[in-house]
Image (cartoon, rainbow, N blue to C red; front, top):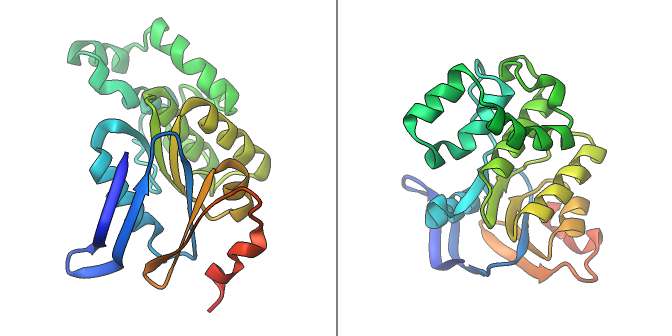
Length: 216
């Protein structure tokens, strides 16, 4: 599904990750871990550009339209599936059929009472859950997410991860919570000093095995 061979990744003339070789197969659940600034988002950007429209996306900046409702921000996930006329119709008058598709998603993630509230009026955690619902609504076999549970409590983080695992066959997430990464992933990729320095199955893996990623 994704492959890099001796790649240098970064922005403009600056390399963040150097000489990266990596392959991710369909059906894997991969967590990228490491300190802030280690290069997790850079690696995710490479995944996204290579996979293009083949994967749903939860960006770190969320990409919400603050003056639009939760419903409309979620509906955006499938804009390309409908005609422009139908999309405009839903902008003005949300159609019962589309509300029926979206309602189970917001009910599961505790947003149903805010379905027609502008996302700009929501808390950070509620906005993050809206972006997750948009990715769930978009669907497909794969999802890429950049710190998708950073703004929610532990209970909701577990619920979100369970939902993503149920919905998507292939998952690639940058994660700050190592325990969640081990619990819900099949493979951990650790990044440190501009390189991939850890790449193993989560079977029998413990948090202590990854402590070296966070030591100077």
